[in-house]
Length: 480
Image (cartoon, rainbow, N blue to C red):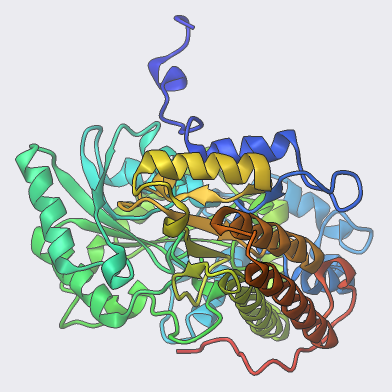
């Protein structure tokens, strides 16, 4: 390998992480409802598949939106020819308006500040290149998305320094934790260039309140460092409290003294369930960053065919409103079913109201409170229970025993099977020889089955979605 570069051959991509090892275990033995019913169920992939039917219906009803259909082929030449890397004007306009709607129309976004990128991955790396030099660092509250180690560090050479958050206060970010992390960096002679916030949080499934965001804004203003806010899950909030964008705080003059320090990363991968489209967005209040990022974006543009389709879809206000409402309802129902199913066997999870996953507490199943015991338990869950959940250590969690389990990337029947496997495993591990435990297990299976039957009265599973429909669940998308 000596003939390859150091960047190409270093371990910065992060493929040796247990987070990605779980994916490999799934790939080698994937669950299938008929062909491989004992295979590994993928719970390590945060995909939003609950509203594919709503998307498909729109695509079928709007064939002109694609230049690859007979109805839309008249626009093939114009769209397929070279386009400026600023992006199609209609694409930037529609994305800006969509970002506003997701945030309850409480803020405005200037389309001229929209910089496109190949997914949030490319957006994060582009910002890292713009804002920091190799060896410099960004502070990141823990636990945080394992992909940051790849996206932000691998090719840029920057460092990520953890801001330790703890379960004692539900992993909320505190000013004290920020100051401690900054002080540690100074002691190590590491230059801190910024703070990265993920709101709503992956893996916690929680939103930051206004006071926390104001504290973060005050902190970066005092230190004169950048603030990157990853808001790619902003449209997955399904319950109170509602999502507050850093864009709202940026408009508070008493708190935000320098908007040039504020940058937002967004994408359509989670909110719309389009990870394969690779639509990433950088929104910066800093003119120099916008200009620099736009030049760099030429290495990872969104195809004009995709831009054209997205612009048409997001310009349909009726569709957007329907999709966001329906997605919130289905995410709320799915989250409730999954968390209640876990609770039947005493598995608690952090109280969340956003995202496509639960942050579950398996500390009582550890042999001892160590990360070695966490990995032992994780290997057992992967190898015997055949569930790919992601261990907290891969998210840089400071406490062993926490796991992330994704629930929106499967249909209802797969979720039933998942909960049955979890129930069987927990009862065996905690002592299934007791008749009361066995009876409790039978009752929990019946209650879960009835829960799904009640759900089926209101909605169809993702497999059978083929037409528009409504749900009568009282849960509605948070607008605050």
